[in-house]
Image 1 (tube, one colour):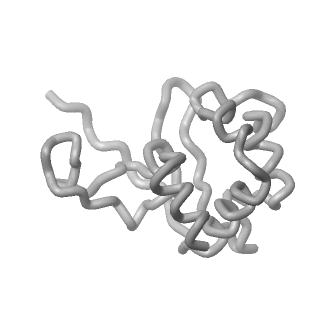
Image 2 (cartoon, helix red, strand yellow):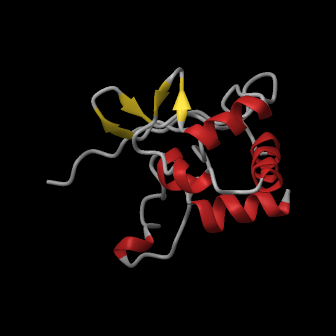
Length: 127
């Protein structure tokens, strides 16, 4: 689980798109604040990227499957960027596609081990 956590949190940046909002109020390092990650909605998706495009929840479902995917489905998504036949235009899957199977397996097992979560709400736009 340690390798999967390291890859997901320190290299792949999954939380940037799959945690909404990414930081707690007062905890956004991009605003010079001490980092405080939103653990309540961690990796639960909900970040809007435009009309009809919202990041998915990749936490375990009721059967313990990350985003409801078997490892085979997860591996296919990471290799092709395709979900329901369509390419996900904002996911950096071309980079993830180059990862070793054992690294992607470590990420998958980490995702299986984290708590299920529900998407958070997008913060209101700044005035």
